[in-house]
Image (cartoon, rainbow, N blue to C red; front, side, top):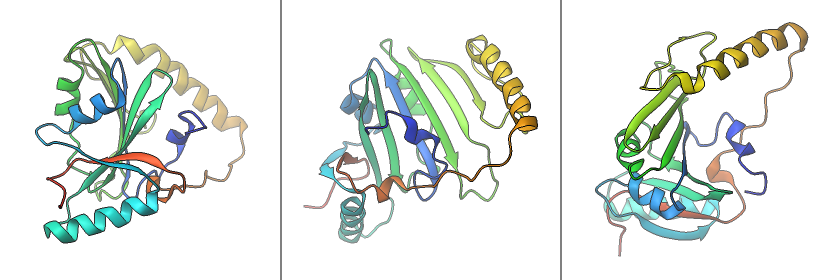
Amino acid sequence: MSDGIGWIAREEITWAGYCITLARGLEPWELVTRLARDTTPASLGECTGYDLNTQLVDREKALHRSDSIAVRYGAVGDLAFAVADGYWPGEMNTGPLLAGSKGGAHVFRLYHESQNPKLPPPEFTYFHDGDYMCGFDMHMHTWSHEITGSRPDLVSAALQAGASRTRTARTRRTPSPSPSSRSCSDSPSPSSWCCTGNSPPP
């Protein structure tokens, strides 16, 4: 993670898009356990993306089911992060975020299901101390201008300014190639992973 959180700009972090949870006020493993809800996450240790895929395949063969969710976790500065991989689409709902933000934690999520046939826009949500503070889709200039949550004022001014800059930039810039997408599971460098499905095979 030598590039800070710049990897978030990649459109395809996993095969299905991305589900990135960031937290301030929580340690990385504490964030993982809160996301795991009523299951106990099993640590997979330090491994590369290739090794992770191998472990998930072996695990699913042993359990005779294909629903494992792995989480790549760590910290950048004071932000803990958890990046979902495996069969996360439709499973990583916001319930754990609401509960996970209790005790004064700030929890943020960037979520996009790129393989969903309904083509939903990418979403941002923010929870703090058990409250849903604000959320919006990240294609506001083409989709919806609604900011939901109890504190839309936290982001409304910044979003309006950003939309204005985007419209200005569109009139001045020539199209540039899209950034190369790279799956979180293709990362050659070791990262800390855990599996948040059923109990791992013996």
